[in-house]
Length: 166
Image (cartoon, rainbow, N blue to C red; front, top):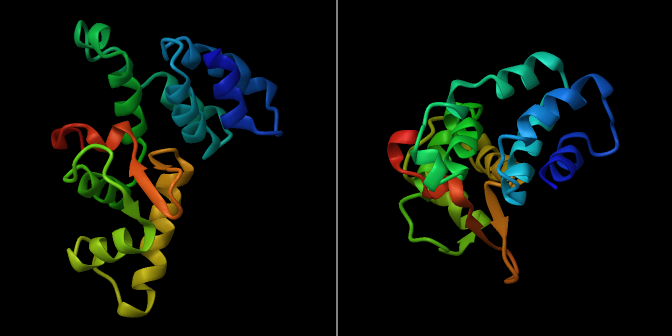
């Protein structure tokens, strides 16, 4: 099941036969967890080239957790996902970790919080557009999830990771 979900989110309609075997290797590391397959699939979709997929598949984080991964099988996948985030996205996601689990974020208010906290330095002209793009990128990677409430989102599992992971 993980393999099917991973392929769907990684390829969409753009099948790449040379990447399917690497995708199978990665899917085997996801312990059958559908959300992990979605998150890793979206990470893979960022670059549909063999080098990127090998880097994800061969990340040291898949094997770094030992017994801890037995009790929390999502930990390696989440860490691999964070490994491939840009620094500014790590900061934004880390900021979300300050809020309680299932905290409802409004997209625009969260972008304003990122700006007001001076996490990112840039000219005022592009300030809001850039933060909205960052929000959208986290959303597109399934790290921020929609809710049934209009314009309300929650930070997914990775945002609730300990700050030292960021």
